[in-house]
Image (cartoon, rainbow, N blue to C red; front, top):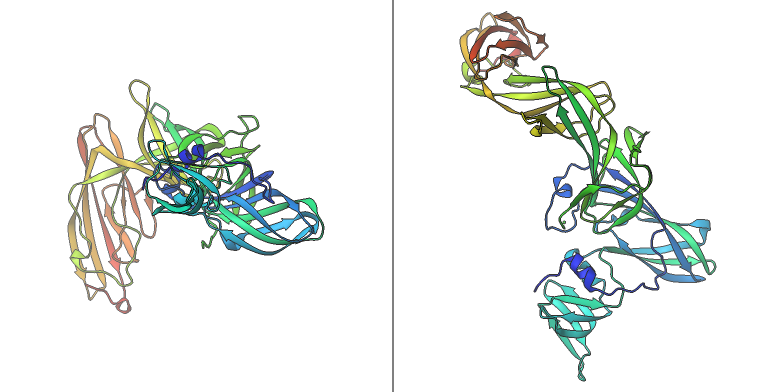
Length: 488
């Protein structure tokens, strides 16, 4: 069978407006929650993506008859949560007796919506292969009650090039309703539901200014992904920053462009709070085509101060439940790389997202030098990312002394760290050590005074000359009691 892409199929189907009971949405609002699933934002051929979370509210106009009746609402996204659906009719003009969600069927959803309707099936050469009522559409092919000849027959078409129809064409899910109306009338109704296939995350770009200091031009945007199986046009959009707990009940290549706002281009989202979270309400309305990633600004572009660090770090802040006194419990390795990090202070509450850092080359062209994730950062707090590993800097660490006095409940350990700099510029390398044999320790000696010291960290700033090296020697003493039961 030759599958027909949904967008190609949409051009092949001559769809007419159905006499449905619910008209198209008159007004729609979307509340989008942050999603870090790369499948939402990356190119691919997997159709809609069941990731992300959004709450939709659509205004529909009902054509009501008096009494009990069945209504149908089509064009819903593919991953609607059926337990979240609610329909409220203005003025209590009708009461919902029951509802059933007809789920979209992946790549066959478009054809499946034509079941029971007359269709023409064309081969790849343009000839009609079957003409009649569509009975089934799935991976095995199209089953058609063929009426193109005098003798009616059932045709199973395995390979086809196009399908034409004059019926209702839908690609998403549909909602079937049974309602009881007190009178015949036109009434507005608000349909609300949760769905996957939509999400957002922050995207930041920092361009470092030339010179000895650290300043960068900071741009902040919201990337809004739609892989829900339907277009969203003229929607009011609210973005929720934070990590609420969301209980949950599988595209076309995304298009990257700036979302078309209906108001002034310079307008920024209006910020507010929602319980423990922060919200960004976009001005005007936007269009979110299916299979797209749109971007809108979060904050004005500005220049902010930053700090770059060349960091050599060993160990973690983990502390064992008993003193670890075996010499080989923690090893010291050979030459290792030194990471390049960036730190800045949040000028406002910064939603989590990826920061791409650029630096100007000798021709003045911005070039990417690294990227990393920025976590949710409250205003006035520091954000840290690792850009990568420095090319010209290396470090090695060796143990120079180790003695254990079990009766005295004491262990002494010393290290030498050698730092090399192959560049033509002097550098300052931050050495961060974590004494982790036991929680009770003291710094016995060091060749350089520590720049910072906490309960689980020692930090040193070590100047390293151009095309040269420098060494750091330090020793720590651990102590414990007999009740601590040392291991090793």
